Amino acid sequence: MPSRILAFLTTGVLGVLAGCRPTTTGPMVMRMGPGLSTERFYQVGFRTGPRLNAPQLSERGELDGAFQGDAKPFDTEQWGVAFDGAVTLPLDERLSLHVGLQGEFFLAPVPGYGLYSGLSYYIGTPTVGLAPAFAVRGASDFGLGETDSTSSLFGLEGTCAFTVHPEAGVSLGLVPFVGAHRSLVNPGSQQTALYYGAVVAAQISLSAGKSKLEVSGGYGRAHANGASWNVPIAGVRGGR
Image (cartoon, one colour):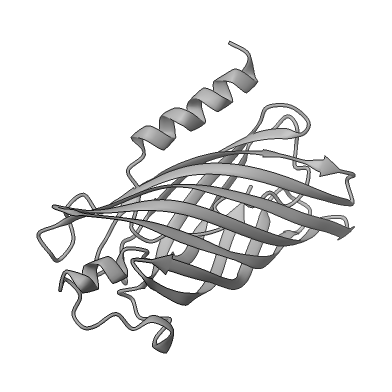
């Protein structure tokens, strides 16, 4: 089977089968340059994002207090920190498949775990370019939270990384994103949520090896269940 067809099929299957976490990190796919056309690139670290079902849970009386919104952007009932592990698989010199695993193990009134997958395409030169990407994800706490309900999330996200490479081993980028998600709290509650924003990111090679450090930060805006609030975004990942 041709590699591009396999990549599209894999992304579709993961979108249907993924069980991931209530916390939504974004941008999910950040391609910081052309990358390597013959080698896989592995990353692991931490990322932050909103719990898009927080207004839903508040309406159901399943939060410890009322939904705080912009008054408390770091409230862990509406904002979370997650482990993030990802691999970039080059399909040719410009097209890459991205697959990731995420999970929450702390700061989690509602823990969750899961997968995401996406495709990116690099346009430009080795020094300046952009990389549009499309990703699918799912999310669930599998009923492991503090309440009797089960929270799940499924969505689509588009990103476009604008990158420059001022010197060897350094990539700088601006990465806007927008995603639409379906939040399900069973039994009996379904809502559509929108999450968009942008981050500034830097990826720096460490010493003379292939290891890289990626840091990112920015802000997003979440809209769900009639509420909207600002979301601080931060992330740090090591890669090789």
